[in-house]
Structures are given as structure tokens and as C-alpha cells.
Length: 337
Ligand code: SF4
Image (cartoon, rainbow, N blue to C red; front, side, top):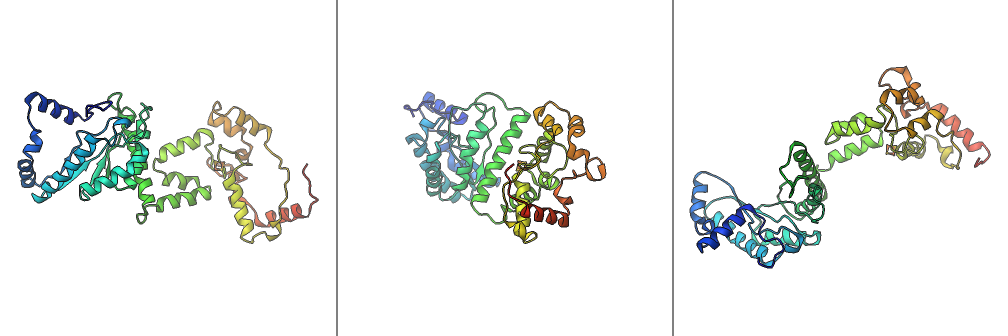
């Protein structure tokens, strides 16, 4: 590994390498491997074959040192199995995206399908502070190509000791990676929750949307930061431009509910009220109470109860009235205002 940019980045690997150089002896873990297996077998312990020579930067990935060690890990896997021990094999931490598939497949071949667990891998080195993201991209690819377990990385990786929120961010990033790979691999039922959430999203059912979210509290807080009322749109595009709401209308037309409305023409809508403009202009500054006071759609909420749906909510559309208006619109002379 003398040609590497960053040498040995494994703690155990660096300590053992220094011990071997100082004492001019083989790695004692290697020499005593059969004895170690006997102890593990006696106490029924599964253990990990570490990768002391894993790459610590993209430039060192898939180099001779890493691959020679992987070959030895394959040998040790067989020796452990011969002793009746279960083992898993530790995998690399920094690998360019295009080399991940090769690394996963090579490990499976050299280690005879033993479970492989990976530390990321990070797919770029220039985002310290965001390495939960750089590594979960690699972890998704690794899981898709056969990794059995993902070892999470926090935003503090390479920089310091992770604190509570760093651990949360790292764990969430890796739940995403693992789930994305499960879905891509077509594991039965892996996508069911995604599909249920998509249905709730399409129905603009916010409560169900939050309930199915991996982090409901965060999803609800983000939604309510701008608009903590149950409307059939959100603050991202607003009522008039909400594609999901419009799409619901299209589906209703397509279902045959309003066949004469099939030929639509461009028409001018009343657009935003002055109060709505004020809300949008001051977004992020207004308190929820001020938003409620200004929001004309909320002010006219059906039942006017706290949490009641705004009067424009699709649930309150009167089919007969909608059909009448559609007929009027179809029969009215074309106008682009
Ligand atoms: S307003 Fe935009 S972001 Fe919000 S639900 Fe509708 S389409 Fe989606």
C-alpha cells in the first residue's frame, strides 16, 4: 500500500500493521486464526472478518492491497466455515460509483457468498459534513448489487464525534439506502408502503400522508410551517397551480362524470385574492394565526371549526353544480381574456 494516497485508514488495520513492522512478525490474528475459530465455536459467536486495508479515498479504491486482502478474507471464510463458525465480511468505505458493482460481485465470488457488510461506500471525497449523503448513495448501489448489511455513516464522519442528531441523520440516510435497494430488487411487499403513500398523496389526504411517512413529525412540521390547514393543495404551488388537485379533476372528467367537459379551452381564472397575495409575499414571516386570518379559503372553512377543511376543498365539490359550470364553460364563447 505504499503507493496509496492515504495508507491504512482502518484503526485495527493500522495498529496491526505497525505491530507487524515493529516485531517483524506475521499478523497474530492470521497466525492464530484456527485457535480463534475454536473459541468462537465454543461460545457460539458469529464474527466479522475486518478489512484492515480498505481504501480511505477514491484514489485508493480497488487497488492491489484491497483486492489481495479480499482474497485472504475468502480463504479465512472457508477456514471459519470448516470450524463450524459463521462469519461476515467487512467491505470498503470509499469507492467511485462505477466500481461498486464490481466490488460487490468480486466479494461474493471470492468469499463464496458470505454476508458482506459495507461502510458506505462514499462515492466522492469532497463533501465533509455531508458524508451521510455521499456514503448512502454508495450504500444504495452496494445493497442493490448484493451487500447484506449497511454500516451507517454520520455527517460528522472524518470530522469528529457524532452527536445525537448526527446519529439520527446517518441512520435515516441508511434507512433510505436500504429501502431504495429493497424496492429496486423487487423484494416482495417492499414497495407497499410507498404505493400507499402515493395514493394518500394523490388524494391530498395529509393525515394519511404524514402517518405513512418514515418521519411523520418532520413531514407534518414541514407542511405546517407554511400552511397548517387541511387544504387540497400545499404551499409549494398554491391552490391554482396544484397539479395533484388539477389531476384529480382530470381523473373525474376522464371517469365520465362530466363527458361534455372533455374539450377544454384555456380560460382565465379569478387568480389570487389580495389576501392570498399578502400571504405568499410574507411567507416565512407570518405566524400561523396571521395566515389563518388572511387566508380567505380558511376563513370560509365549512363549519368554521379549527382544523375544518377549507370551503374550496375537493371533498365539498357539488357534482351537479360542477357539471352545470362545466356545461356553461363549454358553451361559452372561447376567450383568452
Ligand atoms: S401544491 Fe404542488 S407540491 Fe403541493 S400538493 Fe399540489 S402539486 Fe404537490
